[in-house]
Image (cartoon, rainbow, N blue to C red; front, side, top):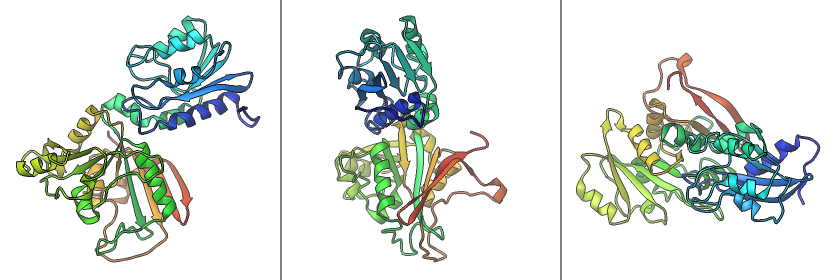
Length: 371
């Protein structure tokens, strides 16, 4: 039986558990949010659950099915319970029918079908509702869902691994491995939890990666490749594995190359070509229409640079290894147009750093002057 300690407020402790449960669905629920629910009475958990994938029961129902008596209990949910009929019945009805006395919600659901209506419904049935407990943590967990609701495009996380002197590979292109096992393990967690992973044709040509998740029990993200002229051979390993592959190409890419890729089960999407390459905004809009809520960008300097130039990066994970390899021609993690003056540099907010074995991870959110 789980009980809270005395070092933090009970509401925060139980909400933190709900967020932990919700994270189990990360990468699996699209286009639905990640939601967990903890049902507590007399200071102890009597049931808990989470939303496992789209079409499955929601977290509240999953939890309530595990107890015969939730009367008078408090339910902790990291997102406002739904109040509309979708693939499953409204969660507010399950809470009302279970006769819980109180519901603690981390944040309001921005989906216009729900936004505030779930809370109103619960209060109309005499249930006490509190909103805003651990809201910042809840918003971060569902940052992809929130951005998709707001802009119809996915959350973009740019990730790279570099040496202490800022190189992502040697002058020969060798990069296995820049960082250690702990860092690479976290990368596979990201691949498991985010909906898609994007690289450029150059990365595929140089490394011949599979772009799969090697985490035990993990799932493979949708693989997204930028290949303007469809220059990659269909025999590349990225086209072999059991995961969806999307290749974005320019409108004038060879049709024969498209036919060869489609024969491998690859989806080819043509988008306009701009001065700096493919229209990234059009690509993100197409991914949003496909329900992709979050995407890991693991490209080289050119791909990262194009995303930063277009102000499309929402989050940065920079892994730094205490190695020095030198070489004037050894590439760095971010190319693109760059900036002329240091005082114009892109700053990060909410910066965090930690050690992973011998490596360092720096993460944060870019702050753009205009967006």
